[in-house]
Image (tube, rainbow, N blue to C red; front, top):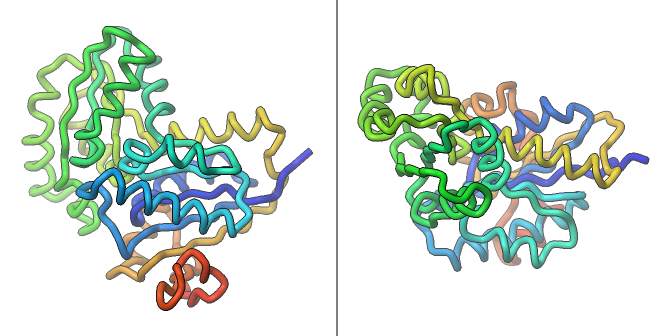
Length: 282
């Protein structure tokens, strides 16, 4: 049996497209319905209650798209809102934290794991709690790296300023004899080469979006819900950000397909999906 319904994916902005890229690699026959909440980004400095409300609204929107599961590509939403999203969803919900933690534990023989992410993700303690639950006694070191996000969106992936920021952020982690480092933000995979150089060859980097993509494949396979293709992707934004085609293409690893900007006027925006205005990608 096959299930042609799309996989729903959401993030606070465009960074979740790195997770979509990994889904497309792991599951090339699957369709994706992606929502980027670009009108309300960032989530990292918002309260648990606000992030949960946003996540529930987006899950409702994706429900209107008849998705067969929801991937919460946003690390902050996974940290703060995942239990509520799971309780309220009629379909499986996959966050990025536990899949990334499982990969990191598997690749950490000495049980020394680092985590980098936004202030919201690191402040929540969700990664550290998951590591302690799955591998008690593991040494965990966490570091918020908020400047990485604007540097990535500026396209400064190899800029001397970015290297200087990375050296500063990662100095303590570099000296901690880590086995693995979890990239706990969907923007960070674009800096993976630079982060690897700074951390050195003895540290394995774990992309939380890629881990979630493989976890999603396992969930769908177990449920006999894989699609037979062809893939038909749909991309939605809550606002059209500056230079979104350029930034989005860098995250997705290919030219952006047509994107629909969802109208937020008059009615709740997630009820107006059919009234969205299409924008053509490059």
